[in-house]
Structure formats: structure tokens, C-alpha cells
Image 1 (cartoon, rainbow, N blue to C red):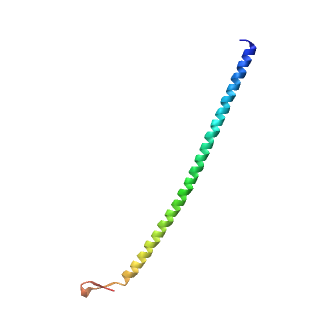
Image 2: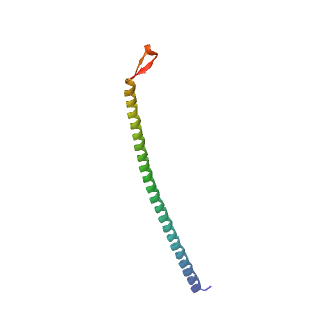
Image 3: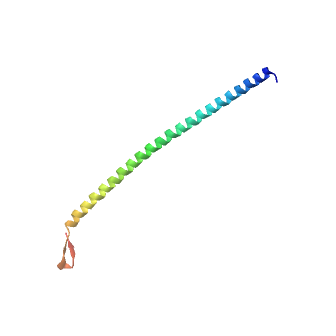
Length: 93
């Protein structure tokens, strides 16, 4: 092989390697874009879950408040009841 042929072969190899590098860069950029899109999607899902969780907590708190309110009404009602032992424990209001 002559020196000119070797240089031409090396240039072709170099050109081929540069094409591969460019292709790899492009693939990496595409993968990065996919990863960033997935991260965005996951962040949105996390935010929705946080909101759902907050809504759930609010609902639970509301139910708890309602139960406490009912308990308070029940205890008020119970305090109006009394038993007459002479009448076989009949309940009077």
C-alpha cells in the first residue's frame, strides 16, 4: 500500500468514525429527551397524587369533624335521658 492509499484509508476511517460519533450523539440526545419527558410526566403524576392526597386528607378531616359533631349531639341527647329504677329501668325523656 502506498502512503497516499494509507492516508486516504485513514481519512475514510476518520470520516466513518465521525459519522458514528454524530449518530451516537443524536441517539443520546433522543434518549435524553425521552428521559426528560418521562421525568416531566412523573413530576406531574406526583403533583396529582399530592393533590389527591390533600383532598383525601380533607375528606377524612371532614368525616372526622362530622363524627365528632354527631358524637357531641349523641352525648347531649344521652344527658337528657335518665332511668327510673322504680319503674323497671324504663327510660324517660
